Image (cartoon, rainbow, N blue to C red; front, side, top):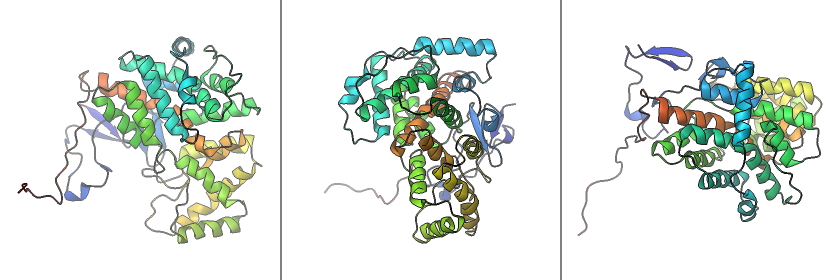
Length: 398
């Protein structure tokens, strides 16, 4: 008997019945329509995302390398396995070319997510092993340097970039390349938690699904991942974290009465209240809870953190007045921007690149599973959903 973990419930293949498809399921973006299975993570309405069965709150304090290992191997590493895996990532980390001339040629006003997609695609043109696992782990290992170079060249800080040191951790390699004059311990702590919280989120989110769909046509891992980053860049998906910090800056006050007035004004104007609500969750996102706990520890008096603390109290109550809103609670985006801003990453246009960096681990693991593991090793066939013709009739050129 095959057991399928779906939203925290067990569905057996004896039932062999997952959904009654009707015309109402057309043109809704496949929302809620089952199309496959996922071995890396699942999301429940009450506890949020779990990686390979572990609630995210139990993983948030771990180093990112160990969570990458979990997603690819489906078990947490022993101390010996952790050490060996970090050594393997260090071996893979050597860049196959110089990204400097590539990034120098890109428009400076291009969004950082566009730069990220170009960088990933370039790595694939230089050095694709045409092996799903090898390429996935090579990309994980090279992302810290890619990210650091992206920042340096887009900001015009191209002089004196230090050599990469693959013996450092993923976070340290990025911060060593970035060279910001900030509290390095706080920066590393926030980035570590951020990466772990964003690495995976089930199989059906847009960026993950796009990457797997592109890979199903046997495009390279790098082409599939660049496609994922382009999907992630949209404001209805990954770029929501950028919009959320911009929203917080517009609020501009932590006074509860003024915050409530601002929230009601946004709703009255038909504008979204960023950082709240979730398609699956019916309570506060545990990833938000974890970030609030971190913020209370490292920056309780930061003005932006005080604003999101007040929003966390006020916005759900106001949003709950609308019976159409099933979850008015804080999601992962509400706190991430304030924390990144506090540790010296002031430009919110870069925030989605951290989301992309993190998600490379989960998407890569899912692509490997679909290409190599699923269907007893045969892999998932090329994606080809059925579309019906609409507003067309047969006709001929006269």
